[in-house]
Length: 479
Image (cartoon, rainbow, N blue to C red; front, side, top):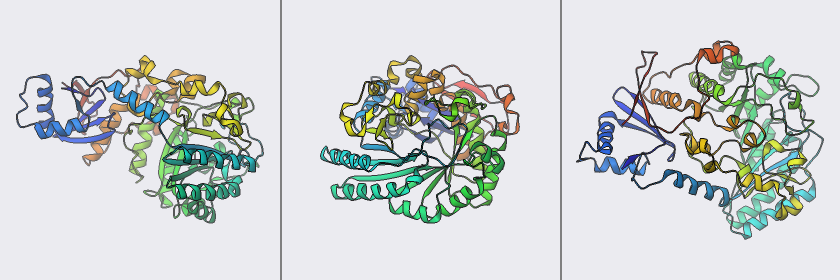
């Protein structure tokens, strides 16, 4: 037997905590038992009396048989996810927007989802039902999707009726700037089985209004916050906070405001690394001059964000779950559909006709662009194959890999996996997590304050025994 190559381990007091990437679970085990298992795997313990424990560890994927190739296990999962999923559609109801965000990657123009496009989407669903697809998931997107609320609600009813009649699971979510997410609208969305809404708030009022101004230059913060407070009676709301060096120092102030409005424990807070994607030539982000972090730097920022959020009572985001594929772009049964019927594979290309793979009217004859996306393969990349984060990342952002920097594609777990596991172990032990203090230092001093490796993380089982009273943590190899 052998240990999984995707174990990350922390020891707190008399318990060992193990996160396994393949299973995606987090386990709390008596250290005495874990140390016996280590000796058994090393061949210095007979294993007598360990049958139940070893059976549990094998089922949890922490320990495997010697002949198990975990890369092949992950590859099989990847292929099933790429080619075997349900119908997934990201539908742009309007490419227009009432905001003028300087980092927006889309080419905006007034538009509403055309009736012919809606009809073709229904026909596509009928094809999926006939083919035995198990589910349909829709993400409503823009521009600002609620500018096309009538189209969204009408099409939702048709989707729901057809899926229900076919016994097909239906789910939906929406990405909205929140301006039109009134109490009435939230209730109507809920009746259309839109289960969750993502709303972006990038800081307290003065910061948010600078990052996400209305087209007329007016403030958007107060109305959006009021809408979120009322919407949570109808929808699961996820507040996204885009982060760069310009707003990092104001994050705690935002959390205090949200908590004071009673949102702690009722909404999810999700940090996001602000990147100046510029897919379309006339996208605002072409001229965005922000202080964007690298993935490795942002891995540290994310740790601080999560610990602050926990301190203010927001739900912990936890450790990454195992996935098969990273996103819509690389899954064969998922498409991004424009208001005029354009088809893309990636959200980041919305509005960029050079990257369109065809139209909804001829979706069976997509052009050569689709080959690029479906050919994205983390298992042909040496960095990915040797990375402890592979099971929960699966190659990360294909768009960044194709058009940006290779390191920009990675998820943060590649860079902060040990600290994330340690913090989760401390939290489960009822002890405060390690704070980086980054929110309280100048962004320009980020790397000087907390060193972060920008090199690929090689696979290896590391264990750190954590003494919460001691800032310096000793590192030893496990086994």
